[in-house]
Image (tube, rainbow, N blue to C red):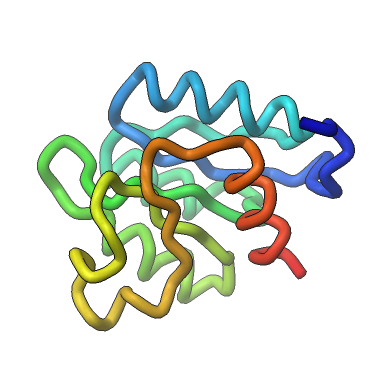
Length: 122
């Protein structure tokens, strides 16, 4: 994958509770030249980061240690920060009110991640 994705320098909040998946996504985002905020593995950690960090966009796992991350999604939306949900399930597994947000189904390729983040920021 070409490292010149147009994402270089963006501050991306990564919210993911599976350590191996978080490492893979961090590596992917670093490959694009992004600055990773986090990763946060719990809802309260992510909410704290949303409060204090400058964030350009976010990658948000739907399920965090058995809790849904919708409070984080709401906090990001309130601040006008674009985000993408990630999950092993399809869009219809989300409550209807969250189905309008972008979703990447795991496993995620670098191309899918780059394309989705570019769509979020443009």
